[in-house]
Image (cartoon, rainbow, N blue to C red):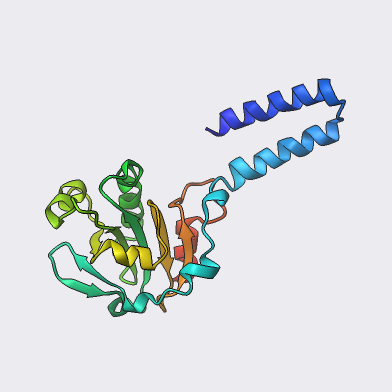
Length: 196
C-alpha cells in the first residue's frame, strides 16, 4: 500500500516539474510529506478524537456479557489497562483482525493488570453461540454489549474501533487497532506499556 503511495507521489512530482517548473525544494517537500504521512504515521487519519466524545463516556457504568453468559461491569476491572476491540459479525475487517488481537494478547500473557477483549456490538443475527463460532479459536476475552443502543450511546457508528482505557477507566485512545513497527502515533503496545 505504501509503495503505491510512493509511486503516485513520484509521478505527481515528475508531472508538476514539467508543467509548473517547481524546483527540487518543492519536490523534496512533497516526498517528505509522503514519508511522514504514509510511513511514520500511517494510521493518523483514522484516529478518532478521544479528547472529546470518548473521554466523556463513563465506562464504569458499562456492563458486558461474558462468553459464559454472566454480566461483567467494567467498574470491576478498575486498576487494569483495558483494550476493547469493538466489532460485529458482519464486519470482515473486524474478524480478519482477530489474529493480531490474539498476538497482542499473547504479548501480555501472564500480566494480570492488562485485559484485552473483543467486544461484540450485537446486531439481530448475533447470539452468544454465533459469536462463539467466530472467536472460538482465540484466547482473548470475548464480551458482548447488552444492546447496540449502548454502542450508539457511546457514539460508535462504525466498526472496527479500538478503545484503550487507563487504570481509572478513562479513554486514552480511540481509533484503529495498530501495533506494527512503523506505527508511531496510536501504537497500541506503546500506549499499553505507558499506562502500566
